[in-house]
Image 1 (tube, rainbow, N blue to C red):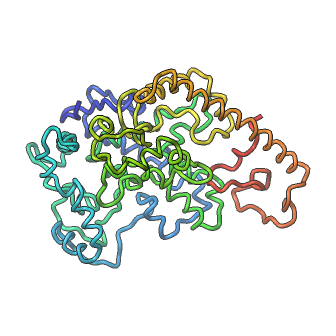
Image 2: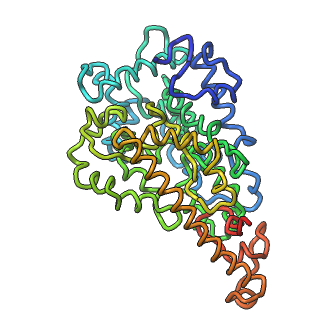
Image 3: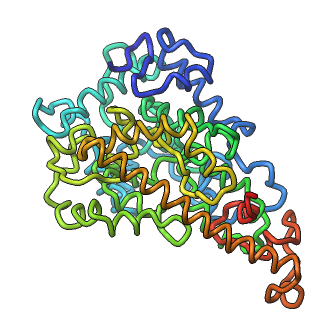
Length: 448
């Protein structure tokens, strides 16, 4: 079902979002849904902005691109006032790669999208464009019967459908997720629904975390990050924790290619490294090896639901599994989350045999049985759970030994060569054994 002019009952958006926003999904219009989403999205009490530890840190110049809603201001060096056409002409000389990427994009080629024929892998984009135009008419941004001619510089960097020229010193903005959500309402609502479906049974994590919808909040609300005096190092964490703020971590500027974002390498930008080595585990798996060997033969332009039948894929990708929930694909990637990437966080393991976890495991089985038998899927998932629990037991054993050494004052450097922690961190076991991931260091303490 497409988003109609009169209502925005989006099948891929779970009931939990409509309930959280107190909206009747059968009656709400695209305009009402977008306004409700944006109101919550921009609310500091709901995770927007610098957070409760803001007094302890100051942004660096690059920070304007990490949280543009909070820090970005129009440039003052360029005094140009430019029309749509002049934007393209000038930037063809000033920043040609931007323009080249945009010219390859669907944004710049809406007529080509309208002329797509059934049977073409990207034919789905025609319906998507019609859906977007219905959204914009509901919001009063397009007249009835009017179609978008293109999505150009001014639409994203000034205002959608703006007719006037853009004053660089006053009008320029860096698009945030809610700006993209004006047109891409379904995707924005799906992503924002992570706040409402990532709810832990015993409050092991705050509601909506960990997820892309609140990843910046999860970053700035940690004392280790806020207290770090080397702000360039701290903002190194932020460079991956920006999905909450903008969409170009996965859909890179200025082409915003869906095909590119479907490839596992797009996810590897952030989901890699010593503390969350998802890319390393995936790329060395049989799944990842098949993608590496055969991926260039596949048609990545096919939407996820058609990846196997139309795109020719013969192995799963990150997006193919994590964006799927019981047969549907969406930008909510947490409805099946059980371990949350960090199994050592106290209390997480206790969920694994709960009704909450078993229901999510059943949803994983639906995903896995696209390629495997149910018996294989369940046995492998059981292997993963029990293997993780065994690893945690060893971790807790070693952690208890180190904790005891700390209590006895026997850790190297404990009293001799370690500076006092910066406020708001406190001296103690967690500070003596910091972790470099930016997560709350007290998660290192034993859960028992």
